[in-house]
Image (cartoon, rainbow, N blue to C red; front, side):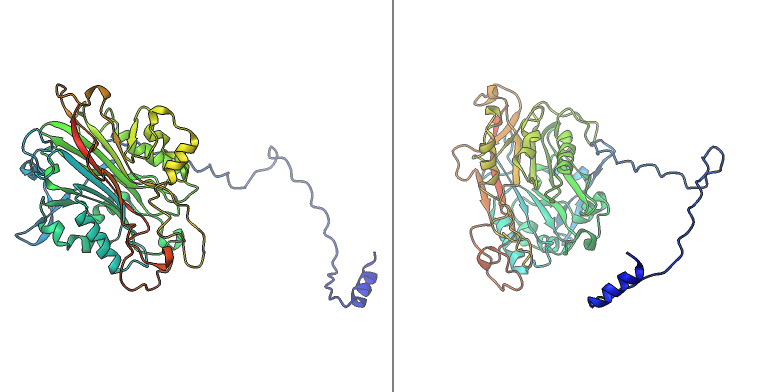
Length: 432
């Protein structure tokens, strides 16, 4: 259709038209082949090499200090490794560090959510009350902010309480974990968060060690690291412990798998450790923390050979019986530790969280031949039998009293101490 006719038809229908009149350019002559003309274009950029997954070694593990409260100076100070020899033996074969429960060890893992911008002092008070009344000997905390850590260190129970507590610090965690993505880029407001471990002084023997391993992280996440401990009884290693807060994004299952492998490799008794000391044959391994798994299949590397760790939850299906997918899914969702207290991600999004059991404690099971026998050498741990509440979830039975503020995303509009429940497991020493 001629252009004049097209313009007239557009004006007749009340349409606004913009017609550009120009003379078409002549076709560009073909470019000579590269063999007869110099190619001045920039060379192609080489593809970015993906960094290899980290594997634990003596070089990657960074030794850090345990801090204790010095009553003379009224300050928390680093505990020199030479001072570890003042502690009591780990096992009840000699003098027990805990006379009220000489054959038990209680561990607790808890995501405090204290780095959230809506975190209120009333929630900090509820968390501290839970920790001091939990009767735990070793506590692994996640999402610890600097402000909450200051309240923790000022708590009288951890300063003058029975047993004398030792603690790792967020500063050493952040220094070893390295820089993370800025808060504005990862879309998460709030304070910088760290993992912290507290344990009773009586658990730390002469040769005990504590260190931090930097973990691979996503581009839009904060720095990630794992805290590891080696606890000795005399010259024999009895407990090897690792804990962390793994990647929380649902689509980061491959990244979480690599983070798990970094921790599992160090837990393996044949792996290289922070020192040249060899592991004892009866070393018990504990793996605990906030695993953030999206499906139960992500836990299979923990429970399958060669690690064969055991889920401390009594409702968990045994790995030896090859449980069905439905049994794994039921154990993954019930009893949930996350997603049921704060079912909404943000007041404006209204996107429901999926309730699931992601806060867990795994342990190495003693050999069946050693259970109930007193003629074998060494010791191992297993969940306490005959005792009440050998496995228990805390922090989800009572809402926090106090001003509600802007925190209206909790169940029934109530404020809870955290969006997670704490998991406490009581073990008992058995000959192994």
